[in-house]
Length: 363
Image 1 (cartoon, rainbow, N blue to C red):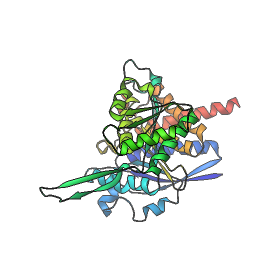
Image 2 (cartoon, rainbow, N blue to C red):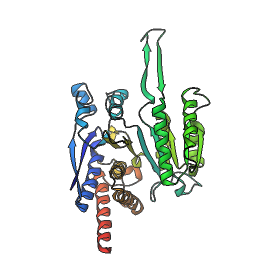
Image 3 (spheres, rainbow, N blue to C red):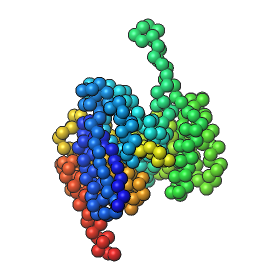
Image 4 (tube, rainbow, N blue to C red):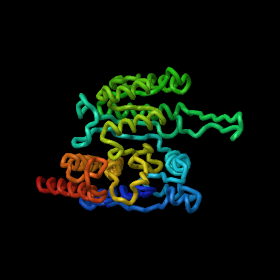
């Protein structure tokens, strides 16, 4: 029996509540299959930890996490801890330390999910964003000069290396070729005359190696408009760290809201653990009320299954989420329902069990 070791960082606010439901689903899959199991080790890091110890994670936290194959993160952020501390001292620290340079965010409007756009078919919203996740605008390069003085100046530099740019664009081309879908690059070459002109050049050069992949390029402002007016033109999308961060939140709104938004931070070479998370915030105003939507956390668990090669179960989990949405009986308040976080998670588990039983019966 294969044992998959997962480090769990439930985090802050609603993080622990939604992660419990994702773990419930993973345990169910393992119990049904019996050929593999998951081992979960919990780490209490986050803003509450920071309030006690003045640090977001243990000093040797990265060394501890190296022992695991995957990291399952709930959410970070809480009043009293500045967002740049919670982001840089935990989430970005993990991404950079483990070279998780591929961020994958599916933007798919499932059947039963809220339908936000008029005159757009549901099947037209089906994008896969591949975001550069290790450098770019989030490289942390710059300076803050003359703090508090009249001549105060801040400098924030974007860093685009050839290695970093080539590898994310090539990953996107490989994905588009494998899935037989078009690839769109999103940049801002008309205004950012070094970084984005370089990005566009690398994209064009690499495209010559993939003549079978249909390509297009858009400026980020035009892309934002077209995602709303004509979303079907976007299939696989590759873009920089900042643009990907912004546009995928827009995409989440198109695909039913942040309660259905999942993200994977991948180290493709598997030299280090990859990290899976719902991309919503910690929502401290509703923490502890059992009304948070766990579906994004469950969707990110399906991404973890796909990453480990259990694609059939990843699809089964996603199908269970869709079936729950179609039923419309057990939904959290953000989706106009009245059910609790745990009730929604338990219903997903019941749907998975029923599907597994039908498959067993048909064999």
